[in-house]
Length: 380
Image 1 (cartoon, one colour):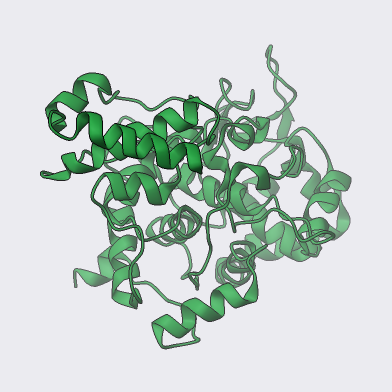
Image 2 (cartoon, rainbow, N blue to C red):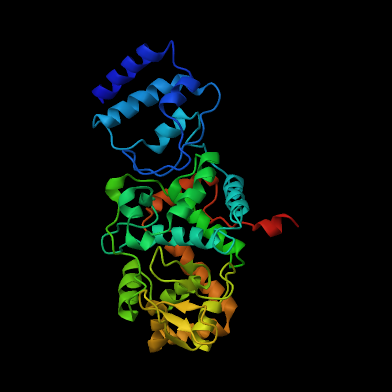
């Protein structure tokens, strides 16, 4: 800290009279894509607002301190302060969170060339993976922390491709700097499900972001190449029973696998941007056979040859206990929606201390979870 204070004073004296935002940009030009460096955070800072040049000396000092070993990353609060943004908001309201919801929802189809025309599936996957690292045995991991901001967790094999979802959230985080990444990513999952036609997901704010030291170990997320024993090991560690495991698996109704990320390839259903019970229907109604290709073992449907199932997916109908729930959800989409909404809301809260939610509830003036309106209902 003494080094940082001295650098701040030295930098302030030496550049106060000459440094302008234009001059500073010559030393630190903004790249179009933020990559990992001595600051492991991926987020790209917003452009400094007019008149923020007086903060540049402090930024220089902090960067010098980091280079000298004084710090290993620039905190979100420091970045927001330097950029003239307020990282905290006094008592955000339900309307504030609805505004964040709306911004996410409006951005989901901003790039028609991305995947199947929507970011919703990968945004949902980010919410799932940032929460599914929880371990009930030692109360570590989970959605409270957003440690996938850092290279160690971002590099976990199960998280390949999620840089697209993290980058998707950056403009929204810049517009609403008061919301934590942990809350933003989980709220993104709620938005994705609802805007794809899925059930209403109750959600509570209160998650806080943590440093890289709190990164959970690799290997806690499901491995698609495994079978039913692996699924039980993973989901029971999270605190879910067999029925809840099958309900969460229904999220495979949306999205697709990419051979350049997971190694697997293809969508699970014919409607990969619509949240339905079709994952279960396809699993039961189609005939599945091993795919003949150079990639990892997976299944392909015989009728069209365009759909896929992972070994973990197929294990749901090989196991008699799992299969009865697959059959139940295939017959009754509303039952699936009801059960998924309940278990997904709980997944998004794993690892979050109760006092965090209580503090946020006190600020909101209600202990009730928030319920968000989809864009279509707001336009009526």
